[in-house]
Image (cartoon, rainbow, N blue to C red):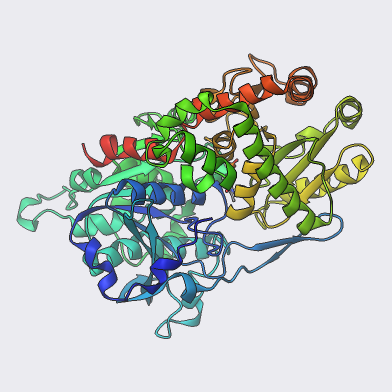
Length: 574
Ligand SMILES: *Cc1c(COP(=O)(O)O)cnc(C)c1O
């Protein structure tokens, strides 16, 4: 990952000067993946937020990121011999990667005043553009011991802890930007976690008392709506935060108008998604199919579809990057130009790929002591370990898999963390370990622990095939397959999320389960046996053609530059 060491030396105080006087877009996200050394993210949502800010820095879009400091991180994963996940706090070196800002603000939470300070991290773009990120920290001497840990654990604790965190993020974040002098013209809520910022804006934008007649609301909701944009990220019900009003009344000191709150956030529970939907002028899903699914979940709201993308310079491996630099010149600024990748010589693509593959295999050997083979097709599968992503699908018919592996050698590299309370996800890791053991003699399967941005970068650059088999329609978009395509690694995937848009059979990769075929395991085996493996082993030129198809047809579109340009022209400037 490009470290951001240079920005560590910027002087405190002057550092915000260039940013605060221009109109800005404030991008709020519970998690933002800034670099591997800062464990302020858990998975795809955070990586998307990070890629958005990296594109903003490249394209010089005036943006400021707001998130929690999460100084104890998500968690550090290790596994016992059976594959049982062990979780430890992932403390990271805050002083090495951020600078404390002088401003402090306070908000009321559950009857106490909670002081918040900001820590600054600056994202620097390819051409020198800079985007500040304010990471909110409550671990201050002024605060009650219970409040000092509010910004420690990402997605940790119970509902009360989570609601307090969301007060810090939404209300605290908006108030902090104000205190720092930012002139915010657009707020972008990346998922509903930050939706309480709406309440801070309502408090700020009220009608003059003499203009309010009895029975009318005092809040200038149209004004607030004009400021707000909301991106929803998951059709999975558990992904939408809901808080009982009993808890809300206990915690939410900053906004006591429960009638107004219920009218915006739902009558049964405080539903963060509802609140964001009702207070935002612009709302979108993250792929065409996801926008459609979400529209059905939330009738009455208009949802745009802005398909996610990945930040090209972050996710292209070093060898492929050299090829693009030589053959496609300014691809880092205009990834559309990767459309020309199909003109690159086969040998250049293959050699760069093999260099990245050797790097991955070296990494595997260092981490696990297992030496995988350079001449064997290597399938990659890595993402959050959770039920709907079905990480163990490829092992569902072991006899079939053995038979395939007896005809064509195959090896599999996997990685991913399960949320500490996701028993299903944890069981999947155990199941993978059992399968790996049972297949030991015929098909090497390695599981790499503690999946993070650096490991993802090495995997998507170095495997031969990227596998994804979520249960439709639950994958909102998915982004790791885009990273693979950018490296010339074809996808073999279920037609959900982005792949429904990026898939051209035999040209960019392969589909699992076309039409209404529902036995995805059988479809996966059949595609492997009939198409993928024969092509890989008997028609190298044909394989390289698919690699180039992945680059030239997927990468020009599924990148965060294109995504951000859409947000700018459709959401931020309207
Ligand atoms: C890209 C990325 C993800 C997202 O993976 P999906 O396949 O979209 O679920 C998750 N975690 C890390 C560390 C990533 O880099």
